[in-house]
Image 1 (cartoon, helix red, strand yellow):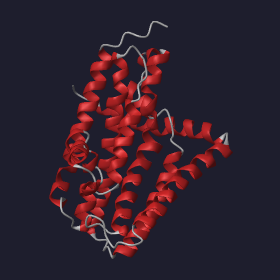
Image 2 (tube, helix red, strand yellow):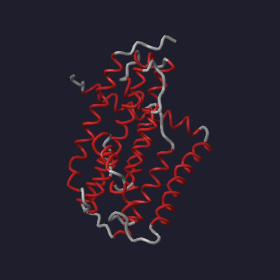
Image 3 (tube, one colour):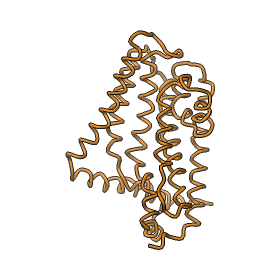
Amino acid sequence: MVVNTRQMWRHIKLYPRFLKQSLKAHMEYDIDFFMGVFASISGHLAAIFFLTVLYRNVPAIVGWTKWEVMLLYGLAILSRSIASTLFQGVWSISGNIARGEMDKLLVRPVWPLFHILGSAFGVQGIGHFISGSAMVIIAGLNSGLTWNAYSIGWFVLAIISGCVVLISALLLAECISFWTGGQQTNLPYLAYQIGELGRYPLEVYPLPIRSLVTWVIPFAFGTYFPTAAILHKPGAQLAFLSPVMAIFVMIVAIAVWKVGLRGYTGTGS
């Protein structure tokens, strides 16, 4: 399929407008907006407290210090901040199918997937960004990390790859509704929870879990392996596959979306 360049640029220009409308709707209820941000930050503060308690009597766990784990955690939620703020609409696919609203999207002069992804602004993503940025800065200062072209390159790659893998996994899970007659499932929430395993070193998990998040739903390539490269940890050699795995999962997710959309006939409501 040949992509029309002019049409692509048109959609790229439209995307911020979609998000702007959603953000305006959130800002009409400013208390809910700030409560959402605060709730997100609070959850990450609890994680910091957990790490502090965990490392109180031990200098390292499976070769990772507290500050190195905090760096990994911070990178993971920074990638989620992008996914939440810019692509929160992915969560609405099954709902659109169930309510029959997909029919309206199909007759609009905008790519349906593009419209859906930009249809919601995730307020919690702001909390993710604030928390993740603070964690990375604090962890970097305390771990003695030197920020140079090498580490910054892996830092950017970790955030982008982590975002792409997460959105692709959620898209795959949401697309199941095409074949369930619009019935919503818990698969998107399961995929999201599995993704949270990428916040901690792979070595703490048993082999089946490590295999799951590495080769089945490759969240480890989103943040773990690039962070290992930044810190020169074992497994760093696999970091070079991170963009490849992210692109591969994205291609699979888009292909499944197209197959599901091609067979979509409406809900009959």
